[in-house]
Image (cartoon, rainbow, N blue to C red; front, top):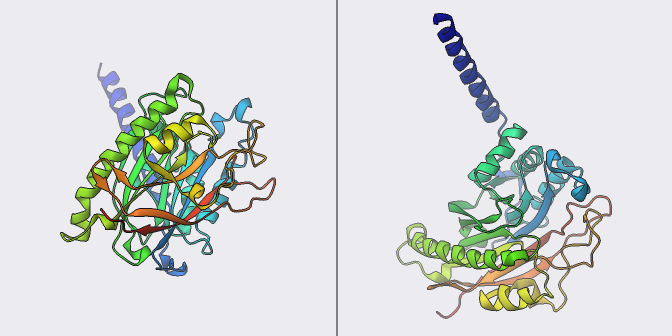
Length: 348
């Protein structure tokens, strides 16, 4: 019996030592964030540049015949980070989808950190790939990844997993309240929400996810409104609070669901469509698309003027561009969008 107890304690000690070693490796391998002095500051002209992209970064263990075009994940992750950190674009915040974890997420995070962009803490990648994938599943990360410049202050972040999802991949929405005052040159908080909906509306899953998303935005808007006076002072105004929703909605711009629910029912505004009647498609334009289709718009940057009782400064797009990608060197099966936004006070 004593030998059994001794063996048990030795096993426990060995397991604890292994866990401690893994944690030490993880901490040692965390990316070191460089100071932003080497990167030109964004012009303080009241505008802010936002990048959004479905990155199609599946870990190798998740690649099957139906998504076999998902290759070069580490290389593409570094290319995506290079785009986000390109001084010519001046991106302040990047909202990314389909960053499912493992080494692709680590490569993305490390390259972003080298360029002076930080991930939300709860979305940070672990160095050890299997642990990272398991951790993201347990945290219901849903493949969402948000990164922002080091001169942006994070007030808080929040996550909501969709109650209904045909893919069972724990999709949902991620929200964060960012103090972007130093970027736009005046006091401003930005409530930024990103999401990824089911690929089809089977079982009305997309409609139900949209309605849950709307309630989530409303709840976060109330929290942002309460936070505003703590951050900007007691004399702050809702003209200093803005809201933008981005992501891969998997809803075609020509569809009834887009025309009936996404815009009028939720009272959100498609910022690219306000600039031109024929915005650039965001899917079906690259060689990585895993099925042939007519190029479509599935990804949007949406301005929110009001969520429940909370009114926001009006978000308008100065430009929404799709950076050119060379065939065979595409970033993803989707196209990246860079939206330059301005925030206009409106009469409340």
